[in-house]
Every structure is written in C-alpha cells, then in structure tokens.
Image (tube, rainbow, N blue to C red; front, side, top):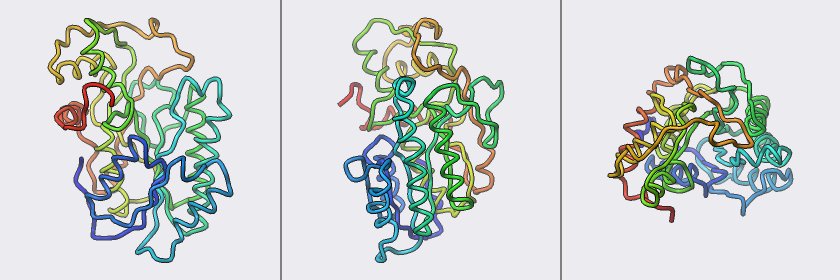
Amino acid sequence: MTGAASPGATRRWVVVGAAGMLGTDLRTALAAAGQDDVRLLDRGDVDITDPAAVRDVVGTALSDGGHRGEAVLVNCAAWTAVDDAEAHEAAAFAVNATGPHLLARACADAGARMLHVSTDYVFAGTSRTPYAEGAALGPASAYGRTKAAGEWAVASALPGAHWLVRTAWLYGAHGPNFVTTMRRLAAERPTVDVVTDQVGQPTWSADLAGRLVDLVLADSPAGTYHGTSAGECSWFDLARAVFEGSGHDPERVRPTTSDAFVRPAPRPARSVLGHDAWARTGLAPLPHWRDALTRYLATADAPAVPR
C-alpha cells in the first residue's frame, strides 16, 4: 500500500460497504494510519436505499457526540453487476444513485464530508487520450448511467465537502476479480482466450484504499480524482502478466476480441484515466500497474483459487 500523508489529524470514519473488497482493505489502511475511530457498515447494517434507515443508522454514526475531530463517510457500496444492470437498471439506480444521494444528505445534515467511489464506466471509453477528471461524461451502459447519476447526486448535495474518486479494473484479496480468476484458470485449463481490444488500468484495491486514507488525512481539496494505477494494458496483457507472475507460461494465454464474448452491457474499449488532479494534493498518483501486480502476487493474501 502507499504510505499515508497524515499531518496527525484524527477523524471519525464511517465506512459504508465495509465488507466488500475495497472496504475490507480500507479497514486495514485505516488501522495502519492510526485511525481507530471507525464505524463499519455493510448491507446487513443499513439499507442505503431506505431514507429512514440512512437517517437513523448513518446519521447517528456521523453525529455521535463522542467522536474526535471531523466526521468523514466513505462510500464503497455499489451495484457492480454490470450485465445485470442492463435488465435491472431501476434496482441498480437505487443503489448507485439514490443511495449515494441519501448518504450525502446525511453527511450534509451532520456537517460531515463524504468520499464517494465511482468508476471509469461513466465515460464512453472511446478516447485516444486519458480522460481528465473534468472530462464530459458519456456512459454507454446502464451501470455507467447509474454511477454517473450517483456522482451528480453527491456533488450536488455536498458542494465543497466531497471527494469523488473514480477507479477501474479493481482486483484484490477480498472479492471476485479478474486476477483471481486468471490464477484459477491457469491451474485448471491448458489455454485461456482473453480480449486484446479493451484497454484500461488494473488497480490493486489495497493501493487504492491506502490512497483514499491519504486523500482525507492530507486535507486535500474537494473534487474529483482518479484512483487508478499508472500505465495501461489490455485484458490480454494483464492475463499474461498474471500467468507469468504466478509461475505459469504466459504463452498459454491466447488473444481474441470482444466479438468472441458478447455480453449484455457494452464494455469501454479504452477507459484510461488521467491523474493530473493529484498535483493539488501533494500526493503522487498510484504506482504502475505492473509494480502493483507484482506486490499483490507476492502477498499471502493473493490465493491461487478463490476461498
């Protein structure tokens, strides 16, 4: 993980979606930064689409009179089933847009700030150059539309009091993801076909979690940031790197195109995100994706098959 940039401040943290891949790594990052005033909430604790539940559970957690320093809510909760969102857009909207709106209102009522995690899918995925933080949105899928609506909801409810962090191609030890799948398939199949015509930025959830903590503790300016690893690659490139880093022959990964894997939701062909906004914080962008992958594969928390 990246090192913290804390000036010694203490916050009351409320983490929503705390049991997911990013939320689990965020708990570790907060502990490493000496932040011990943390309230962890997941779907069993609060339904973020229910106004009364958010007001009662989240509002109480944020405004608890016993906490020290400023309260910050980090929203890691999301509907991430991209294909299912095509058939269930209203349900995805409830989680990805209505939920963040209610959480942001709770923050506004409590005088708290909010860090909301979003996605590269809010862009069309056709740009030849990296998308700047302020680039026009153009989601091509239901999932992307709901996430874009969530961004707008948070920014509208908390002007000057929110951080919006877009990430992409997330992998880690605590949830299903492409890297874990490739490690499993390397042990099960003689060859694997992976697309070459989708390009993005693989990002280790532990690196991102550490940087989210850094962002808050550095008292960074409100606004939009891109929390993706440096560099870019195709899914084919990533699969080969996973095979090689796991001790398997990368030549077993064979190139193909998206035409061979028709899915309900369109995938961005090129969703590389720019990182210029980090200069405002005094923090460097995340490390290169190859460096992150090497560190991830070397950890004991990178199982070859899902637990």
